[in-house]
Image (cartoon, rainbow over all chains, first blue to last red; front, side):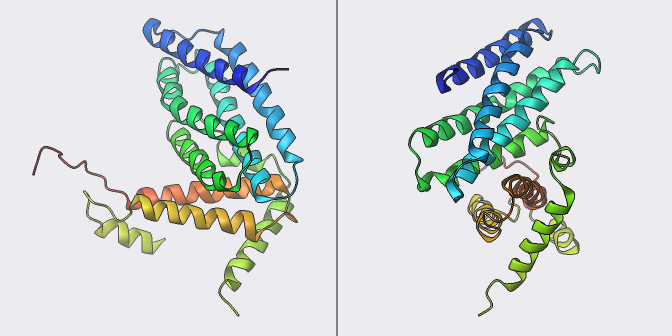
Length: 173
Length: 76
């Protein structure tokens, strides 16, 4: 069973691969194997935390792994289609641009997995939000329209209605 | 969106209208609203997608308020 250290090792390998590609100017197809291993690990963590106890901390960890999966999946997809859509070498530069934010998110997330504490919730959410914002700028995360397909629209509308209702009554006695 | 259009039109291009503190506070309140107000009775995946949607919207709105011209550090 792969460990968090294996995951970090794979991300480091990914970055080394990107650096080599920047030198050669070509996409190395072996990167797909590394991305597949990363996605497989991240998806397992996402599924594990989906079933976690109902509290703010477990939701934060689940949400973070889920966003990492969305980023790595989009990255894999873009590398797989790079030659077809002439996305090379831009895809390499853009992928490399978000690696520092991926690593800082992973470091906080792994620390929280090992030693869960509520004080880490906000910093982790901030890491994920920043990662997502950067990834959106370089088209390295699935668009929201794709995310919406992952769930039932009726459930989503009901939740949104509930949120708006609560927001409207905030501050009332 | 006329308010953001107005703010964008009148912001100082070098200073903008938003600071990191404002950004963090906005984000914190958004997290609180989606995670705590909706609570566990709402499906976890739905909450996660909603939080992403709110983050994306907030990021786009904050972008309007950020400075758009770099400040020359050499100038006194």
